[in-house]
Image 1: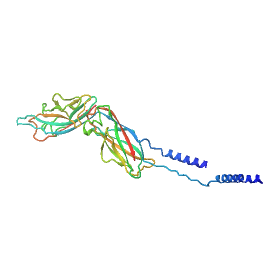
Image 2: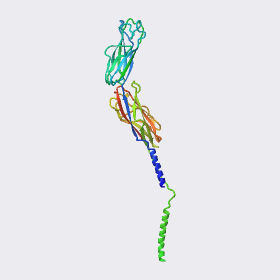
Image 3: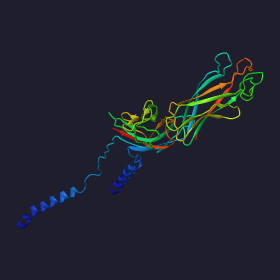
Length: 181
Length: 182
């Protein structure tokens, strides 16, 4: 009898130990997010270069951009002519790399909407576009953050209306690059 | 003769005592007792990854995402029982300047999650918005359900907008999961 009682109690104890796995009815988890420098840009619209009047007024157009930026130290928006005007050059149309006349140039000025925090500075004077290097559009300062919906920037293009250009349609590609550090 | 007659009642009494004592010792060859246990509703859970990083891929302000996994154990009452797993952000993101559950910069900056729950639980439907002020649902349990000995799995898959307006830095929040059964 004593042995039977001992066996029963041992079995009951073992059973209780085997199934004592679940812990409490609450538990916590820590969510951690590291927010780093980041930047993005989109071309909203870009109109064709047009000249008003008939007296070889310069061709002008505007490229509208939206930028998103978060910096720690600094950042920039630059632009480079990655594809020159097709069939441009002497006897043809305009060219950024080899303009028909030395005074011919594709230039631009800049404007930028102020970000939520920090500083965004547009290029202060007319810039000459280049096919060999990126040229400045906007400088961002330290701890600069845009709106979640993005902020606006623009480049206002000017192209000399050289009579030596052969009549026709010419296209070039301008590539904008944004960075944040 | 008289002394013998006097002894007879005494002897009779002695015989009676002896007989009663003799019969009180033997009892029965077997004995039974009732062993009973009441199995009631119960619930418990453990977090698989108590540290959940939220990360964004690429460099175009893609969403921060991450997943918190857990193992749950549950037993609900056979009639009229039920239960749930809920969660609550018990400590908002800190330091300030980054994301916030209680006061997001915009409504699109809310911390949200979707639910995955293995049987016998039922996952929440659709995207849920986490809260610092109330419990929000992860799973529900019906009547007369129970997990196996090893429990069942569940997870909350998090999404957080990568708002450019957040200052750079590392931000931490605490989420508390609670399971109940009736």
